[in-house]
Every structure is written in C-alpha cells, then in structure tokens.
Length: 279
Length: 279
Image 1 (cartoon, each protein chain N blue to C red):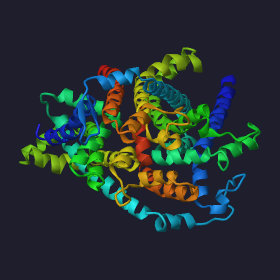
Image 2 (cartoon, rainbow over the protein chains, first blue to last red):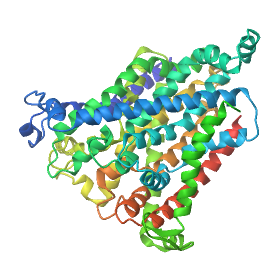
Image 3 (cartoon, one colour):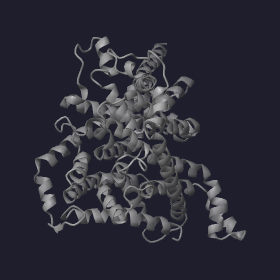
Image 4 (cartoon, each protein chain N blue to C red):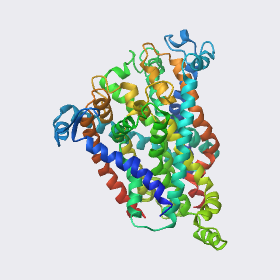
C-alpha cells in the first residue's frame, strides 16, 4: 500500500516536471508565432503584449515583397536538394561497399568517416574559401552544393553502412545466381530493400543543409545566391530590427523541418525506442 | 572496392585535401592572394603566447562545460521521467523534441528577441512574477550574456541527448529491475546498480559528442552576441572567423583552427577507443 502511494506521488511529480519542461519548450515557440502576427506598433509596445492586439498577416506578405525571401528560399531549395541527392548517391554506394566487401584500408576509412564528425568545420572554412576563390566559384550556388554534399557524405555513408549491414547477404547471392551482376543486384534488389534507410539518410542530409549557416555566410556575397539561413541572419544587422518580419521568415523556414518531423516522428521515435517493446 | 571508390575519392578531394591545405596555410603569413610568406611555426607561437587566444579557449571551455552539463542534467532527467508506457508520455516525448528541429539561426534570433531588455518576453515574465525589479540587459552584460547563449544552446541541444538516453534506458532489460525488486531493492538502489551501469555506454557517447559539438560551435553565439560584450562570449570559433574574414590574417586563423582540431582529435580519440571497445 505504501509503495502504491509512493508510485502515485512519483507519477504526479513526473507530470509536474514534464509540464514545466513543456512550458520552457513551447513558450519560445508561442512567442515566435505571436510576434510574427503582430503589427509594427504592437511589436514595440511596453510592456510587451503576449498575444497580438491585432492579428495581421502583414509580415508574411512583406517577407516576399519587401525582402528577397522568395529568392532565398529558391536558393535554399536548389542547393539543399542537389546536395542531398549527391550525398545520398555517393553514400549508398560507399555504404554498400563497406557492408559487403573487405578491402585494405577499410578500418581506416571507417575511422575517417567517424573523425569527420569531430572536425571543427570552421577548420575547412579558409581552405574552402581559398579553393572556391581560385576556381572562381565564390558567390555561386555550385559552391554551396559542393560544400554541403561534402559535409554530409561521411555520416550518410556511416548510416547507409548500418542499414545495408542489416540486409542478409543471401539476397545478394540469390540475385547473382539469377544472373544479375554485382551492380544489378545492388540496384534492383538491395537498394529497394534499403529504401527506409535511404529516406532517413536523405532527411539527415536535408536538415543539415537547411540549417547550415557559416559556410553560406562566407561563400556568398549577394542576395541572388544567399540561402534562407544567411538571409534571416542578415536581418539582424539592420539599424532597426523588425522582429515581426524576422519571426515570420523564421516560421516559414521552420515549416519544412516541422513537416518532415510530422511525417516521420512515428518512425523516428519507434526506431529509437523500439527496444522497449522487444525487451 | 569499386563501390567505395567514388565516395572515397570525393571525400579525399573535398575533405582530406582541404584539411591538408588548411594546415599548409597555417605556416604562412598570407592574404591568400599575393602575399605568401613562409614563417614556419610563428603563427602557432603567436597563438599560444597570445592572451586573447588563450582567453577565448578558456571562454569556450566554460561555454562547453555549461552546455554539456545543462543538456545532460535536463536530458537525463527528462529521459528518466519519460521512460514508461502511456499515451501522455508519448505526447510529451514528441513535443519535447521540438527545439531540436529549429535551425540554429532561428534559435539565435528567437532567443535574442526573448531576451530583448525592453520588448522581450522574459524580462516581462520575470518582472510580473516579481523575481527581478529592473529589466535585465541580458546580452549586454558579460555574465548574463554568457548565460543567455548557454541557455539558447541548451534549449536546442537537450532533445537529442534526451532521445538518445531514452533509447539507452529502454534497452536495459526489464527483468533486471524485476529481479532487483524481488531482492528488496528500492528505486534509488536500482538506479545506482542497474540504470547507471546500463546507461553508461550511451552516456559516454552523448557526453563526448556534445563536448565536441559545443567546443566548435559558432552560429548561435555569433548571431546573439558576436562574441561581446567586450569579448565575454568570444568563443574560439569566433576568434577563428574574425581573424580570417575581418582581419584577413588567414595564416594565423588557420593556425588557431588547427589547434582546435588537435583538441577535438583528442576528444575523438577517447570516443573511437570507446566505440571500438564497445563492439
């Protein structure tokens, strides 16, 4: 009986702490949304109004008409999608190769993949700037595509290796008995089976690219090639910051992340916590 | 081998070569265009004897320590509370991940706005609750600015730690707890003798990764304070960036970056040793 009371008390305690954490997580998001719907006078009222006095979509119109956000979003989409396709393409082949073959330097290659996660990416900032400059690629979308795919290939390869490891080798063998070559077996049998893994890897690459800031800051100089992250970041440099416009742009930049998460949270959470059900 | 080659070549060209090139630059006094004076280790000598660089390493260490502590206290605490079945808990699980989805640029700007001394919501809340009587000038006072950037960083980083630790908790077999409770062990005894040892492998990974990530972090601090006020939040990535792209001492900046790289490699060494032994 005593332990039951303790259990109930603990349960309430859990709810209290989790709710407090939820407030800390959601309050900034509410503030972001609320600010994005405020007009300019409401924005600079003291004390600040928690909810907009007057709901307005002004900022959401302005980011497309008075700021080049249409261009920024277009740039981001082109760069991030291209980089994702390139990274996942290279990573699938390399991941499969590591999963199925032993070759000299395999261990070193794996170590290298893991080590790239430890690099301060800022270490590559100067070499990239210098190389892109000498290739005449400064201020081009291509420079960003190359940079972003490079940064995501190592971990993407690591992820694909993990997924391919889980597909039985017998399937490769069966395919080669059926007369498919190594490449045929890979493309027609193994890759389709690895599709969930491929999707997860692509999402990782997409999120990384969408969020990247410092390389885009250094490698772009004009609005026609800047991605969203730099576009939003640059608004802070203005004399008077229009936080409502800034928050509206932030909210739009957040949408792809929320959509991806909305579609995948079931899989993401299940994947991460699946162990509990199986025990 | 043929499968791995394209990826390996891509990474060789775009990661290994620039890394080597970065190291090369660090031995020169150069503007990357027409001045290339070989000066040996002078840049390194200047780095380790410069008070400014050592101070920024110190600030980075404090920032990293606080972020690692914050993410793990919050992440572990919440993971422990979330580690049970029930609809309410799965809702908490999903909602508490949200901050992790925010692009760093958005996190930085959102928190700058929350912490705005006059129009920000945090001062308003603190004053309404009578916790402070005067508005706090968050990002303009040394100690508060550090708290501000640490707070924003913890806010966006704790969900990943939480999710990974939760997965770790759920991989601990329930039978162990049952056996312990039959033997008369209480909640705390079970925590010390079953939970902590079972969680240790995941905990080491999250500790190391968060340490490395925080140590090389740039975006949030740069956008919130640009290293100020009076260098109070001048983490080492900001020193590297400024040295290169504001003072155009590319050689000196490359030397700073290489030193940070070596520090990260040391962390990475621990990580690799652990991952390898874990298998």
